[in-house]
Length: 438
Image (cartoon, rainbow, N blue to C red; front, side, top):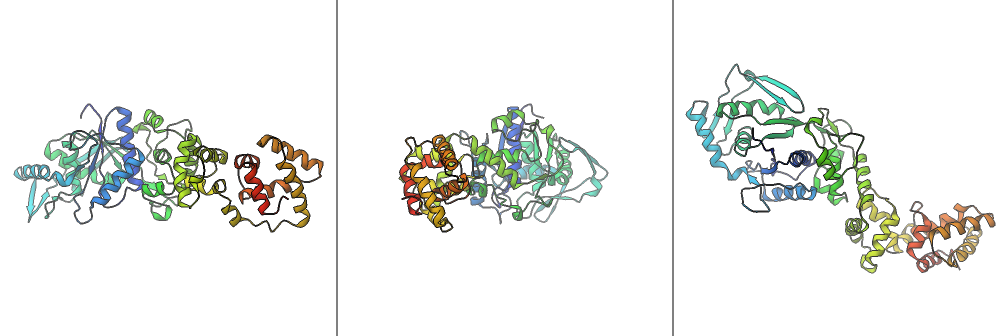
């Protein structure tokens, strides 16, 4: 085995980068970064009917969004393109010819078939599942080269991993059953095995195989829903691995320092959207204000809100006042629309539940509130407590209409913090619209 750790992610370009693929890529990337090794991207595009350049581009874009950069490619210099099996056909033919010459394979028309020897015990030590053994008698002969000249998965993967010097094959546990066939081909060619580490399955909360009914399955869909790459990275890292000490929120740098394949568990992982939402919300909270603004702004624009009518400082501070509400950037945009314009407030609320008697009280209170010398949240809150006590009015009976009148929502950040940020004139205008102030 090579001294340097060399791992690879080898997707087929027959679909977008899904959660399972992203999870495998991430664990390979983490092991390479943890050990100072190399992470290689290899596109397995031998299914000529289903493989497309568009899917290849989407897979690479999804990896780049997650921050999973690869270190090597067939081109010199950078950024590196991936290796592609379709560009390595001569390598597969060469190894196949050798096995034919040695009588270890035979032709069937234009196809080349590997002859499985009988009575052989196949065994390997998996870093996750431990010792695994199988008898060769249970296996059928293996197609290596199809009649169209393309290699099959079980053959090409052996040739690729050996010629690329892959030290660790880290992949989903659904490949455990393929490994004995591959070991036979390693043995027939006289090549040393890499170290294998098979990752646990990812299941939905109903303990069934992950599918669209459990939520989005493409990595890019999470980007479009307002999730951060760092939080999706964090969430995927926790599927089958733990950094210990109940530490669930971490950066990719922290994950890189702590990651160890020896800590990957066999038990299937559960894809829990509630947990992803919690992790994403925590990452959003920790962002510097202008970084948070960069994530939320596209969703404000998508909603048709007048982003350009406000300063960058005001917009960034709006999200600070929002105080971590919203589990995604998209939700944060929806929860903060009233900072940008009064229009959604009027759409959500009409003030019709306020009777004449309560309205008269509100007019008196709001007139006094708007006349305060200092337009600061602590001053407004203290004044409201004193005013409600002096006028024998429950604080919620004046604070809730104030909240509804300026946000259109029953739940919001602190109403006085919102009022301070909107400014005295804007609050007066909004309250006047509902006839809550003279």
